[in-house]
Length: 201
Length: 419
Image 1 (tube, rainbow over the protein chains, first blue to last red):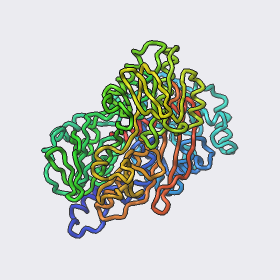
Image 2: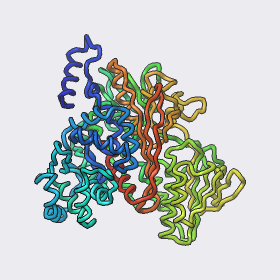
Image 3: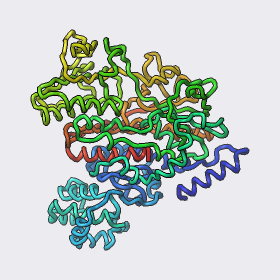
Image 4: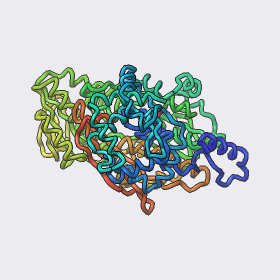
């Protein structure tokens, strides 16, 4: 059930059932991930709609990817001082509920505007990326390849730099080809690729 | 990273200005427009990081609850980032927002101060008017203990604290700008507990950076009431290596100020001359919390339940933000925002006859140590046996990337509070 529907049901039951009222659903309170995701909105925005350049959008993120990210941050495979501590907290609270909550939100592409010239350059340079992430950048959940579209450019660029330096998931065999590719790309070009994928919807 | 102006921010967050005016215009600044209570009502005192968040999140969780927010200021000015106004790195306008986003959520805003709380009658006095509540959220921030510094009560309009972002922030920036090169800036750090533990040391970085860049013959003397740097100690010590113009004197509580001789006296009897003074006085919970008997034996801070933020002194009254004490958390904006969300959820659960969930807060404090680099402290918490307990604390060394993260954090959290 989406949150807006839940909200309507909550209101309706409240109005209709005040006399026999004994704990009917009130707004999103009964969605288990709603309160568990409170902490996230300080940086990732309300309901995961990040307005920030270096903080990823969680709204609409598939739960398999968010769960993997939380586990990798908590174990230190993905380096980020903020997320290492917070991921441990999310694991304690229940990552399934948190991931389900964000997966249930409508996807909100980043409001950070990309430079059209950089987008055009990025598109021209993306021929290799398409092989795995697909012509529309949507990835392939079956192969564990994430959707890049609409994520903020600063975040995408930082991830490419981390892959290039082998600082994200070092030793992960499935990422060997990706990292080899990143090493062939000059740092200046990452901004263009990030702008392009960020601009896709 | 784009620096947001207020208007850009409101556009980005999808806030309709017109809607805000329609929804809340009739109430602005007019307490008599608030009618008698017809349904369930939550009143929130204080529209800062905690109170504005709580008001919004009560409405999000249960739109059948009426929410009235009492906040005398027409605009929200962010304390986090305001130290960067002193160095000229940011403008105050870039961290100033109106309350139209909250009106869009149906929050009724009264731009007046609460004058008294009557817990027995469950109502808040606003001048001659009274506003009834089912539950009250008190988020009044901090007030100053002027009388703890001799000479300060008489001089408090001219000796600036700039510890509540707003006109004083701009005035202090102007004083720094108009000081002659070679002048001495003196700033004082109050004894713990006070709002924003790393804030004074970030401010020292910003003033020292400004002086180094614009007035190279000037210096900054930091008189700290505490025995050492209170927060991010090693990181600030490392950052200060770039500022030979910064002289740090720990265990030097300012006891007296004489504005006629432009001199402060410390607890060890040192007399320090200044050209510009920034005296941050000792602090306690906002006046309304003290007046309403929400503070503990120390007469300064409010003890609360760690799950619901209900006051241990008065049932039905919740206290959040910098006014609280007893949790292992700093008096930070991120914590106030987290408390606002958790408290709002607890209030809505209680008003619906449900058990509130046990949600821990979260903290991050970014401090800019120059015009482009920042450091951070990160705290994660859990609730154990009904009490907030820290899982871990992490510190990050100074980088441009941390400064970028802090800008992203600000943009998102301002939206979380007001958007």
